[in-house]
Length: 69
Image 1 (cartoon, rainbow, N blue to C red):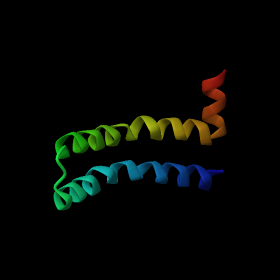
Image 2: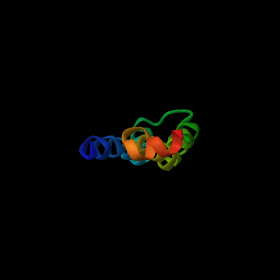
Image 3: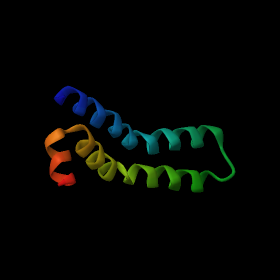
Image 4: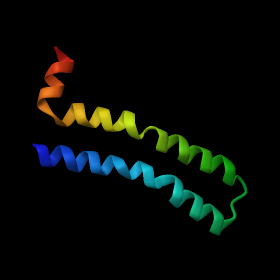
């Protein structure tokens, strides 16, 4: 159970990698609306802590029981 929870949280941490990759792709591709796309990627990255907390509650039984009672 702990390994599954850690793997789920690790997959959520990929949200932190979205802005640098988006910036790199936009810099190379020279898109017309690049600034908006970078802002969207930073907004997605800012969801990291909320999504990580939700994943922690969903994948850990003791936290899930505490929240649901």
